[in-house]
View 1: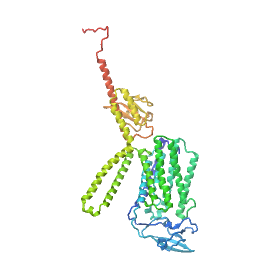
View 2: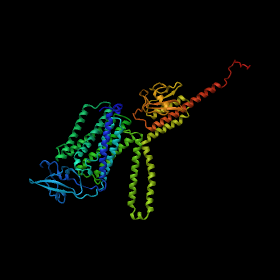
View 3: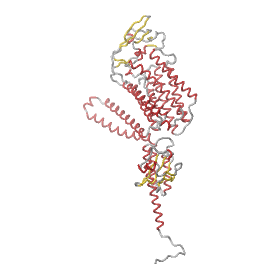
View 4: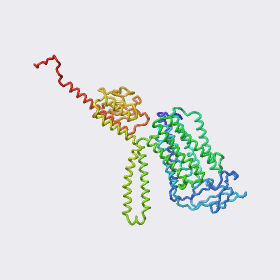
Amino acid sequence: MGGDNLRAITTSPRLGRWKALVLVLSAIVGTHAMIFGVGALPIHTGLTYSYPAANVDLTDYTAPPGYVRVKEAAPGRRFHDAGIRVGDAIRFDRPRDLRRTAFAGEESMGVSIIRDGRSTHAFIPMPPATTASWLPGALATALLALFMVLAGGLIASRARQASGVLLGATMVAMGMPGSFPYEWENLVVPWFPVSPFWLLIQSLAPIGILAFAMMQRAKVTGRDVTRPWRAMFAVYAATLAATWLADLYTEFAFREVPVLGAMAFLSLVHWSGPIVACGLLVQAASKTAGQDRTRLGFLAAALGFYFIGQTFIGFIINMSGNDFSLGNPLAALRLAISATGVGIFLYAMLRHRVVDLGFAVNRTLIYGVLSTTLLLAFFFLEWGAEQIVPAGMREANMLMSAGIAFGLFVVFHRVRDWVEKGVETLFFRSWRDNDARLSRFLKDAAYVTRADALTQSALAEFARYTGGARVGVYAVGDDGSARLQSGDGLPPRVEADHPVMVRLRADREALHDDLPETLGAALVLPMILRTEIRGFALIGAKPSGEDYRPDEREALAGAAQRVGMDIHALEIDRLEAEVRRLKSPRPLRAGSRRVAPS
């Protein structure tokens, strides 16, 4: 679990297999989340909803094996109507019926009843299926879950280190909106193997975030994880595995395992991992500086908020009535805190590049989220306007409806432009300012009077633009080889038949991939005069370890070309001045004689 060897891991086939596994997991959990969200819409699913387990006591061990003791059978309810009374021991003909929450309309559950030593059989009828209720809280939970799944899958697929793949897998597991996708529960037979799988995915999230935090701490300190930490992690993982097995036992035997099956203990185990993980990330952030500190700090805050909302407040709701509707202030608070965690992570990922997804993906994500949010906002505005205006007026006056639509269209475009400017400033200000300073330098470069001064200024500006990368300027001689004119730590000469020189002559464009390691370059930017390569700028890798974005490569290539042309122009000016000096008549010195022409 020490620091990653980037080059070794990047080329490891094992990492590719792990990425594929995370993508499969993303597809499974994403499908689960979508079905979870569909169940929150007011549509007719053909199902009716009930929770028989709420009427029984799984901790009463006086019931015969395979039976559970009834603790509630109120008059007028289905249990009472079926002849079941408090204190009876019952067993479902289909064991899974006890933990189901969704049933086909007018389906009935067969149960065996033991009362006073006598056994009877009865059927508990389900009411006809009706249109499902509108559950905005469940829909919001599904949307947050989908974001975590999509972000986790994207991070894992683009990661070049094991820690990045682990973070992506953890986020996918955190996106599990619940262990019961209601619309699937009517499929009784496949539910037996599916239910343990959901619970297993939920158990992976706290293990993954703790492992990720330990890897980040080891990377920052430069030391492998010590034995006590390894032992603690093994104990934690074993405890979670034991609680998972205890839950399986409850699923099939209808008995809670003492301690391991208690909700309080299970929640405590889930809390301890994320709490320690956030502490490790904060500790790692305190040992770093600059961007690394910012990234780790944001990551700790995002994961902390998300786990507080989903796990801690979720536990309180479970213990205080299990009401997850938005009418419950705790449920609204849970969603708000979880959404805050997601928002912090989104901001940190796109603004501070906690995970660098690349220039194109960053901008696509930002403006995709922006456009979707604005469209949804104006959709609800239009819907609200239609609710305010009486239906009779809308139908009688088409001009009014057209006016409402046109007004929203105009406002939408104005708001979109204003928001896009704000987003550009918030997320891409540093990129824009960096480009602006480079443009200012190129404008001033035209007024530098000496080629050597311009070369030194260009080296300084390129180093600033790249965050301190090594930079050198080479001039190509008559023999086709290139000699270093200015720069430190770079090869003093590049032969004419060096692969880079051959590619420059063949392609006549900037090079950024498959460059020889001995050259120490991440970019080679040619300086072309008409059809001739007169020189090039060689730029090393960024000290931050980030790749050069496409826009940065384009800006640097254009700047190198401009600087090369300005240097050539200054050389021409110098040579012309020298020629004029040599051709100009020299004044006679005292004592000299002018020889008359013959």
